[in-house]
Amino acid sequence: MFSNLTVNEAGHLVIGGCDVVTLAERFGTPLQILDEGAIRARCRAYHDALRRHCAGAQGYRVLYAGKAFLTTGMCRLVAQEDLCLDVVSGGELATALAAGFSAERIYFHGNNKSVWEIDMGVSAGVSRFVVDSFDEIDRLARAAERAGKSIDVQVRVTPGIKPSTHSYIQTGQLDSKFGFSIGNGMAREAIARVLATAGLELRGLHCHIGSQIHEINAFGAGARSVVALIAEVHRLTGYLPEELNLGGGLGIAYLPEDSPPSVDAYLALLVGAVREAWQPLGAPLPTVLVEPGRSIVGEAGTTLYSIGTIKNIPGVRIYASVDGGMTDNPRAALYQARYHGRLANRMHDPVEEKVAICGKCCETGDMIAWDMPLPSPRRGDLLATFSTGAYHYAMSSNYNRLPRIPIILVHDGEADVLVRGETFDDLIRNDEIPAHLK
Ligand SMILES: Cc1ncc(COP(=O)(O)O)c(C=O)c1O
Figure 1 (cartoon, protein in one colour):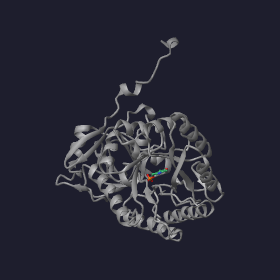
Figure 2: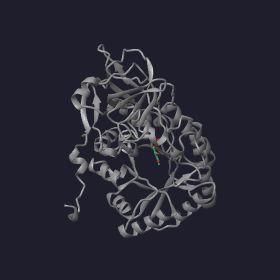
Figure 3: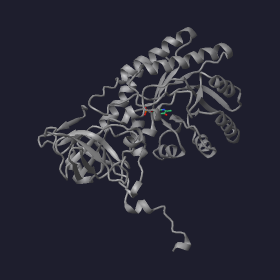
Figure 4: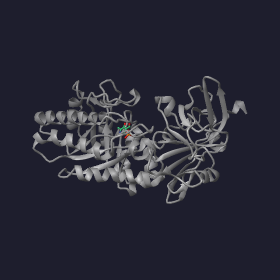
């Protein structure tokens, strides 16, 4: 399914030059494997495409949306690839700062930044706050006063577009907790307020319509709507933003039949739409920013499980249980996301049946897949599920007190730990027994 996955003579899956059966012996299962080469290739695809499509613009920037997968090692990797970073919480910011990520390359998002998070961002010297609400404009103004310095902001607007993706990951519609609607005038009002607020410098606008989007025309429609707003504001106030942040959202392949658009096709369409809509303004194209998360790291991830209990319900289905589940992959339960997988130790064996892959949590909804085509699974087989790099570890939990799984980075036949697996000590580290229970 992916060019970075190969099979060796033993019939074992190979990722980043590493035999995954050997990786399972060394690190145990469940195990999350990230292919460093695949991540770097995606970062470079974004840079290459923007460099070409943004010719003549004031510049471009690729921001990695850390919400997809953020660890200190990942911060180093994307920094090496010259990406900036989008964070949405004090915790993500702290992770980036601990990794030595340069604050002036960090963009601070979030619909409910608390006062301490804003102060943390201001004192770290983050590049931009992406303003999400009228409340936040006030909070930022007070933070600027406290800090005695001005704060650079982008205003997040929602163009009223509902791309075809799961409703939980649509973000550009009117009825959303995010941003200011263009359609009902709130976006115009927010821009006017920021422009009139001492201590805030409006650098540009931001728009993100949703995630896991394959229908790229929706991105073009979103961009046109934002530029139309800019033209209106320019007419009314003379203000013209120097930067335009068009969010992330490019979809990836989870199943063999998925064929997501290439990074190049997506950016050609997106920047093309901006260029065309911008032309009547008679000014140079602004600096174009994009914020991909899933499309940087999603397909680079593979989760390796051991198959345990197999339950055959004649005439109904075969359940194969794995040693992880909704704790390391909440997307199946949350978004009814579907996954493809292979028996990593039997890659040459033919597909024999559709197997329901269930996790080990006490939830009927703890399913990785309902109908995964596989050779007849046996206890002890290794199941590799693909495209698990984004929004898995980042959304993982300790439900049923399952420790979070280790994550390794593979490259050129080498494997390095990116996140140690949790231990039982980690699980009880923050527990307290109140005195009267001792
Ligand atoms: C504001 C913003 N930017 C970027 C992203 C990253 O999106 P994706 O991982 O789909 O590229 C998200 C995710 O929903 C987001 O909310």
